[in-house]
Image (cartoon, rainbow, N blue to C red; front, side):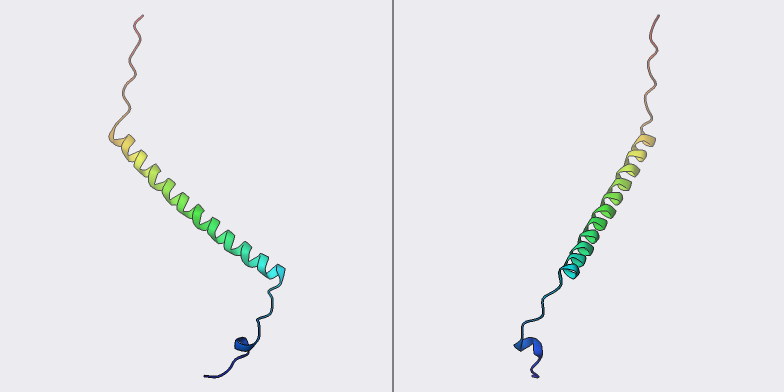
Length: 66
């Protein structure tokens, strides 16, 4: 096994800007995944509602007697 620099020395610290950028990109990825899942669920529920409404037409309103 060959000795490497990482085995003997501590890695250099990550700059605050780089760390913030990485955190920002990860957070944006999570938000985008959640938004996509929410849209998918909304479309599924909308399709189910429209299918139910098509199968069961709305009842005719009763006419009031004068």
